[in-house]
Each structure stands twice: as structure tokens, then as C-alpha cells.
Length: 130
Image (tube, rainbow, N blue to C red):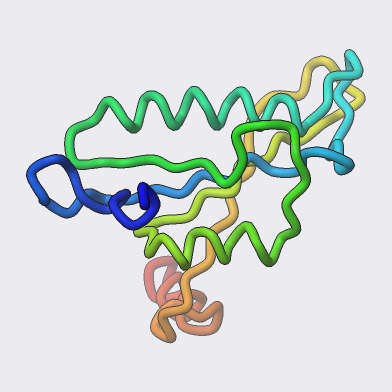
């Protein structure tokens, strides 16, 4: 199947596999923007653009958890990334605000490496500050 070959290019070289999850979808609209735009729609458009740009880079393959306006529960979203043996999983979301002047973005990451616990990171930060 195509899914089993996502990690390899035509020559059989392993690609860096990025699984992009366009947040929300289907019955879950996510945030509703100032002009009534739905987060699920913005996320899907942005994810498709990101997928296209990544797929144009040699050695990278990008896969979407959804390519249409469908609902996929959270557990199944990261299960897709695990089944595909993704090198990175990006869940793309869009924040909303009642103010037209608000700009910026949020980034959340998860690293299960025990060296990167909040306590260890705080200790390293303290050493840098003092």
C-alpha cells in the first residue's frame, strides 16, 4: 500500500516523514474568527500549503491526517503518525481573537525524552540566567 512506502523515495532512500494534522474538522469547527471564519477551514488550507511546500524538498515527505472536512478523533490523529512511523507530528491549529489587531502564533511541542522534563529544563535555564 502507499502508506507503507511513504518513508521511502523512488530510489529506496528513507525520507524524513512529516505527518501534518489539520486541527478540528467535520462536526468540530474549532475557533470562530473575527469575520466568522472557521478554524477547521483555515487549518486545512494551511496544512495543504505546508504539505505541498514540504513535498517539494528533496528527502522530505509530508502526509495529512485529513484532506477533507471530516472529523477524526484526537486518538486516531496521533495513531496515524505512529502507524506511519513519522519523524515528526505537527498538529496545526489557528487561534482566534475578538480583536482585529492581534497577530502571532502559538507553538506547543512534546518531547518524551526524560532529559527534557520541565524540571531539567528549568535547571538548565537557571544556570544560563545566573
